[in-house]
Length: 404
Image 1: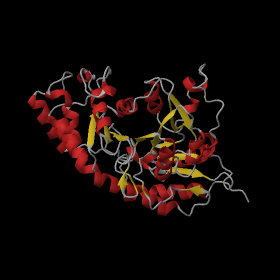
Image 2: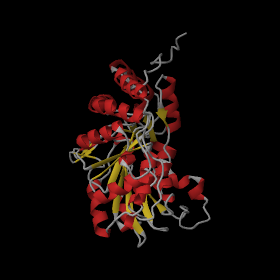
Image 3: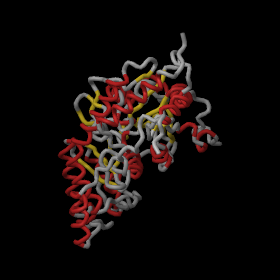
Image 4: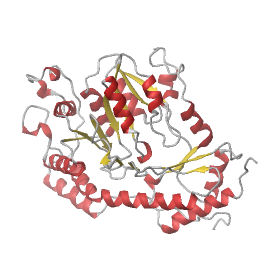
């Protein structure tokens, strides 16, 4: 029975980029009987099999970088990226507090210290003005996170990194093919990369891509990916006595990735169309802040993030989201991870992990009072869906209270 109150009386179609091409590619690998081409020793298979190498070659061409290294997850990619810059125990890496826990755990893996930085309320990326104040003699790197498909202020980040001789790691997990000044994100820093897990723009189920233009880092990343056994007798002193991991991507995933890469441009264009149509429909709603267009940045919209202006709108965020859902809008995110509030950091007995003495006003206020988002990453919206979402927002806005 239809709910008369609802404007949207059906389930949105779920985003799924996997089709016949991927099925055929995976089937071909399975029929070959060789599901992985990796061996951990010093032979020719150290760098993987036929499809891993082909996938990496195509990634290099697509992003115009010198080195591409696939891994079995982007979490593995982050661990390898931090390890590649050779942190010493106690070294500090600054990162935004609004990001996935893998960013911090990758730093902890090497006995380094994650130092959390507040974010900007307009685009949710690291606040470079605060970032510079957090730099100490122990700081060795900045981890920039391109959240929700949006792009960091890289010009400022690079300027700060050069001033203090710091490395830059870009976590562009949610922003594959986003651009800054017409260059793909993660291609102009020391090490960067993307996630290939199931709800990203393209996916291999699980997987990740590391990219760099630095030969030394590329060598270390490959060693870390595959047990580092070939470090024995390595001419590079930095690479001697290394230990590595099993971060290797399989042949099936790589074959799927090759097909997915062909679809990336169209998927991104479709996501941008959905976001732009939503923006045009919602831009005149009083007190609703929509994603800001920036000519320097190409946002690819993993989420469609929104905030309410609490100086204008009396009705609580929770009530607004509840009303939106009552009219049939699905897959709304109410808040995002604040790493400084995770128990391991909030209650840590180790002073340098403890984040209680720092303030994260923007991140906390966003979560408590103003931020919510539509999870475009899991939805395949058509024109009808988008127009009904806009209609639902307008209906809700006709019911909420405003300050005089």
